[in-house]
Length: 346
Image (cartoon, rainbow, N blue to C red; front, side):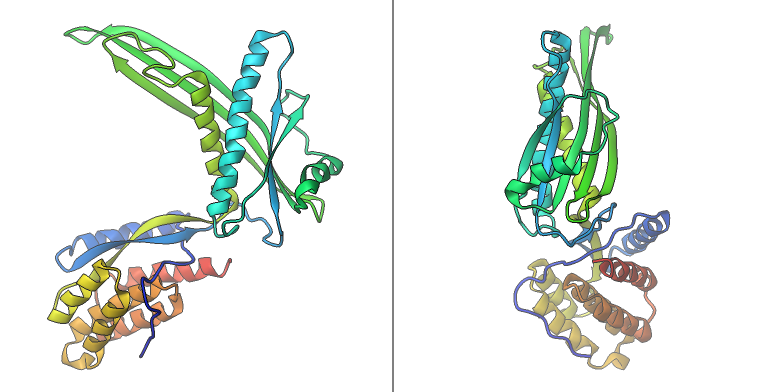
């Protein structure tokens, strides 16, 4: 079998994600197998594409992100303060969402305009926008998809107390934010809501000190905590609707001959073409050393995975199993098969 590689570094493309318990077990067992033979293996980090949890149509030309905010009740200090915290979080959420989506392969670096919509209803049971409102929000950018943070509530809570640690008086302080954020995605062309998502979480910052712990000093202030709460809300929803890059680990054989050692150096220098040429040289006569040939073929499977050629990687792994049975072959095959299934969704 011959294979040609493009010059330069081979980048990881497309993706895999192990969302099921079965998938997580596969990768765990694979890592255990590889670590138990650490003398023969080396570890390499690769980037794979994590699919979106919520499927939305890819047949759109442009998206707009909007934050719905509530200004609070005029003259009521508590209402105005809470509205300011919620608005800070909501604006940060859509800005973060827009940046995250622009970095996603779904958008390919296309900037997403952001808007703010002021609503009168303070209830968390927010009805969808009317289509007249939707069209008014997207018309300026001629967008056909609206991603809307319909409701954002961030409730801060502060805790503080002193205690004796046996040597001195100590002070403890904490601020926490409970987050309630509700998202919708509107398909403008077909006038349909294609996604609904409720994000709930609680974030906590705490500190122990020899002096009293104050909000805005040793721990974040209310608006800083609100801003970070919005950041998390935007990041998490971006992961739900768009594929994103994530780091994984793979292993390869690096011992057995001089060419294997040279190839390992090439891998460390991201010179996959050179490494592949050395591995193919070893495999030219597999019967003379079936174990080493199996290891070289296993490495060729990894090289092709790195290049996004999963079917070719599976062929090389089959060759590796044919030459000689190795401990990680079956598990690596399952991983590659999962990546092929994920690729079919794009």
